[in-house]
Image (cartoon, rainbow, N blue to C red; front, side, top):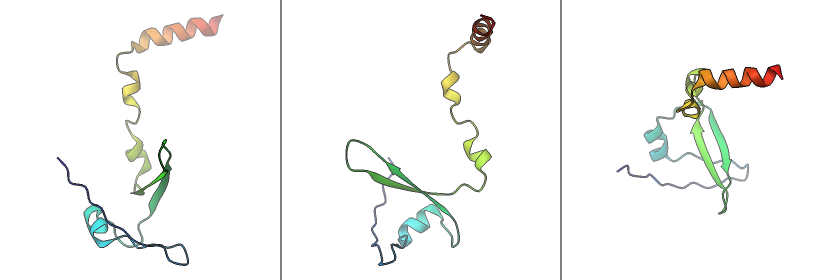
Length: 87
């Protein structure tokens, strides 16, 4: 079971914050690295997800969605599409 790491920081008058040392160390974040901020909306209060910007987007996204085609006969799927196009 993985342990979670929780820490907190405050927002300055310029809307800046410091990434707590324990979080920086755990993620290996270095100075001048870029972060990506996302708002995750659920039925509860919105949450913010912060992650490191990938150094190589193509490698980061490679394989994304590959499970979508699991269990699908792609040859049959393409044949059906071709029939629809010919109509």
